[in-house]
Length: 361
Length: 115
Image (cartoon, rainbow over all chains, first blue to last red; front, side, top):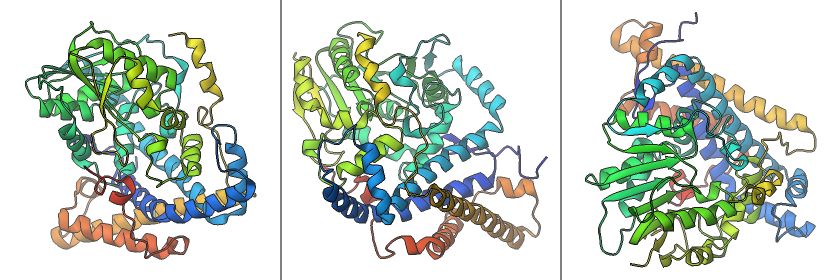
């Protein structure tokens, strides 16, 4: 056995530690490289890609048909090709390293989830025979197995997003901040809360921390996500309930919740599912209840940081096939079609109000 | 919901994982990736050496178990981060503008655009 393998390394915050210091060091390196080679070059990439696309007449209405042509065009712009290569390779590298590292202890983690399934505080319900719709079987962010097909997908996601955020969300700091800014129903009553598309429950737990007396639920289509969400919450002593449910088909009665949230869900589901999800949120909210959607701004309200090219290539090569149609679908028009009154929508950035949707009292 | 209404998703770019390359000669893609991965493995060795030296200096000896369980305190974590930054800039600095001050907070638009 290698000298650095299979030593119990405890946890890092709310996340199980990787199996070796070497894996941690490699992922620190990847996180830094993302910052240095991607974030610091995106302005230059925007300018050069826009110029090259303009010369080819590829400037508007590109999604989804022109992605191959865009990629081919950039072969003549080495700086842009390098940016895209770096981005893709680092993305592949961190997922692979995380999978390899936790995979060394796969049996241990599967047992951990099995034990946690029946332990409190809080509960989790999931169906081993759940039939996933095709749209939900994508490797979002090219995470191998995505949210639905890899039993340890929740743990992988936890460490992967730590690398993605470059330390910014350590301790779930961003989720706590967003939960703190989440608007309430106009009458202020918050006794039942549901976070749909809850992933590993970071935002759900932050909502429970904000509303400690409320009954808080997190739902997600992925069994690996809700199982790990429950484990992660229970380890922190947070009493929330997680359930495997598709966002477009929620198993709750009408008029049940005071507050429903969707935190970075809509950019990862197709528009027909978004429509149905908004309708479901309307159904399960009581009159006067509020649905808060935290997500990317619509394209018309985009602040111009990213050209369409960056967005399209990210969607195509980073496993986000639905993100473009979401930002281009004018969700602000869909929301009232389902019965909601739109109290706020963000016109720049992500963090002012989100989209705040009130069900008429 | 009629599942057939969602059949189109399978044709969207990104639905399948794919293996994109970005240079006309895919070997350049491979070489760039190899260099980045080698950089990571080199940093791993340096990180382990720096930690081993720190343990040796403070505790007199080091074992694999001690190294794996070692957690840098805040000050040493900053030293490691600075060494890592210096390493990546020395090796890869030619690929980006070192005086670009864009940082992770600005990139994610988290701090600057709050209401």
